[in-house]
Amino acid sequence: MSIATTDNPKKVTVHTLENMAHRGEKISMITAYDYSMAKLVDASNIDVILVGDSAANVMAGYSTTLPITLEEMIYHAKSVVRAVKHAMVVVDMPFGTYQGNSKMALQSAITIMKETQANAIKLEGGKEVVESISRILSAGIPVMGHLGLTPQSINKFGTYAVRATGKNEAERLIEDAKALEEVGCFSIVLEKIPAMLAKRVSEELTIPTIGIGAGKYTDGQVLVLHDMLGITQDFSPRFLRRYHSLGDEIRSAVSQYSSDVKSGSFPNNNEQY
Ligand code: KIV
Image (cartoon, rainbow, N blue to C red; front, side, top):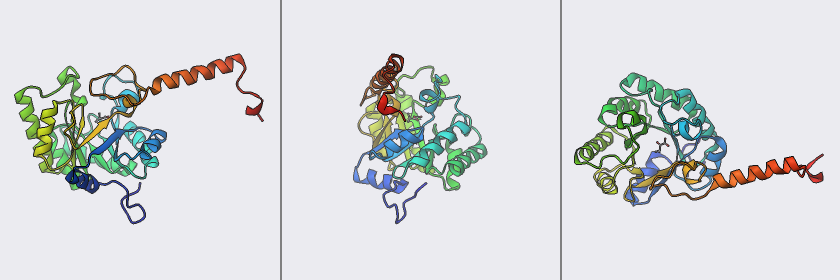
């Protein structure tokens, strides 16, 4: 891990993000789960790397984020932290490691920070997790909140549709966002909510908001790396901008290799000892 010292003044910290938001400079965040990708991402001028529990979907093939364990998240986070010199690394607390028990939440957060040497944790929820957040903060661990479509609650929602389109849920979300700011979160992810609601939340808070499917008015944006690169191809929500179709390129490269092996054209005389 590197922190902002005189030998590495460029390491992104919570203060960097706070200053960026005050200057009106947008924050870029993206997920990574392994060493090789994190190294490429960190060399791409990204501010924050999220070791998301979306690893359950894109790395492990589960249909929800619920099954991933603390140990699995720690494995991914350690791999990412080993690669990263510049970006701030935030690690998702997995389902079942913080809800409803603030002592357990503190213990889980300490385990993540001790074993991975990441820079912060993220967890989902509003007022109901404030006590857990408060304990985690008391140990000096920065906390990023997450509101709106919180995937760990998919069984309660029943669908991945846009959240808080109605007045009551929108008001509740604003109250939750204020509670997260008040307890001391340094930033909040707003997932899949109407753009005008995200605008209102961003205007009412002083801490930076990071949106995914929450429109253009948030202080920053986050995407899942495998989605924006086109590695995952069966997921196409309206908010997702694909910057590459790497899935097609990988398939084509691997099938060319396979056919070269079968035809005997690989390896050739120059590719042997
Ligand atoms: O797990 C994840 O990748 C996330 C982002 C979608 C914000 O929480």
